[in-house]
Length: 174
Image (cartoon, rainbow, N blue to C red; front, side, top):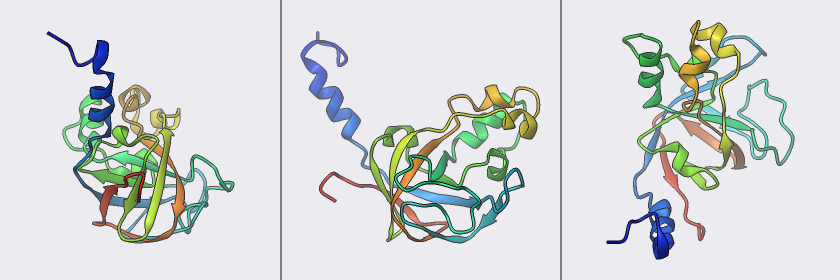
């Protein structure tokens, strides 16, 4: 019997990694108008091509890999559980720009996604937690966020983004 992770089945693994038929949804949008201040939740935001979300304090350079950050909505409950809290963590406390549900963000690494009708992001890497998580979430906050810190992205195409917008994985031909 052949196991899917050994031998000649490498093409099967590649095929499984490429299979992402589901769509996601933008659940939350936040910007940081001032460094080290609380995030401001928005219903919609203008996404600036190869830059940042309008109104965010981030100073990014063209071509930068961390122009926007994304977090998995389903992880809000997991992080709360690791901290012994009953309710999901509020997204603004985790200091990421976008919270997305319904699609496994980690499966999107090195891929392009479309949010709504206009915005296209290139997922560039993982967004590891920083020491601010201890300040924000209390003792153990950093470890609670490990593996749940989200992803970074470069803004390939800007436009208007709204809470509720659909998140779709783009094929190479798109």
